[in-house]
Image (cartoon, rainbow, N blue to C red; front, top):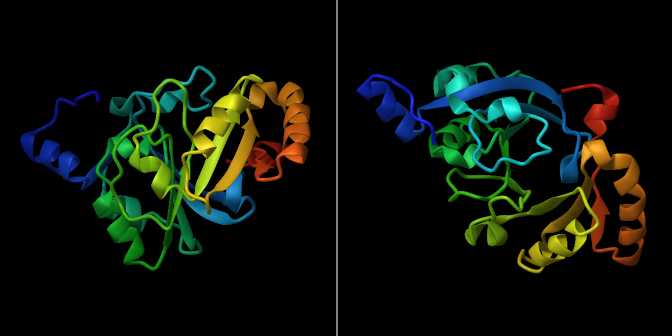
Length: 214
């Protein structure tokens, strides 16, 4: 993880999870996965060491480009209409997230995370969406914790890889296959046929991109 040239007190707050590199926040409608169509406040944290070549938020990778922001400021900025908060990135588990989730839950908010699972878990979550990546596999604990497995499909070979991960999650985990956006015209028909033959899977579509919302 890239280090900032910061004062010792600020560095300590980062390590405690009291300050986080905040890329952006926004109120929107969840566009993919199990909670598609539900309103949510998104907190996007900077920093990612997974490095997917098709990532659509590569500007999140370098955490030092995003301002270190106090939990107070992050939480106070939440739209009062929001009932659910989704913490995403980047890779949010690069950071200690217990203080953030505690602060969010103290406001009665449902707290979700979208993660590759490549780092140890912190925080208390109402919903964990595990989206594993080939470039850096999930830590073993991720599979038992996941309520949703969302696999991005770029090539047909990704389907066999998806099955390997599905075999490791719990029996109640929702299984989703999602076409990588730039390959959607090619991949989507393949997924339709695949899900028809294997109904334990569902297709996730990035509806927010069709709706032209964040």
